[in-house]
Image 1: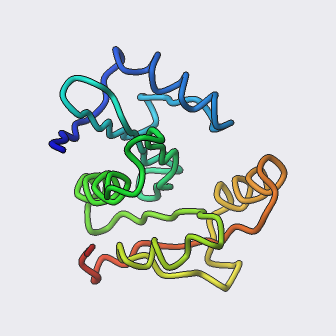
Image 2: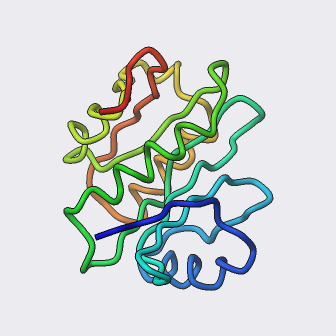
Length: 149
């Protein structure tokens, strides 16, 4: 299966936000986010984003792949693509369900256990995730020294 990954445009927001509403994710905002969209032929099959917390801090979030395309490496390609859009001085965090910890470690993310290292915007998001989805969430930070695999 051949796929292409590109930056999303305003024309993509209707599809992206429809998918995000289905899975209870906050809607996309191109003014504050870097959004990658995956297509197979001309069909949209996946999306992910870097949400800007401030000029130097982003949150990797909004990872979504259509059911028929899951377990084919699509999400990993989105992660790798998005990580190429940041500068070495910028930080990227993510808040995965705890059962996905090993998945994010493969892409150079390290778990943060010291709450004082977590930016306030992420603490609020972690609380929102727990209230919205239940379950346990970890906090990870991208380690620029690790090469995504």
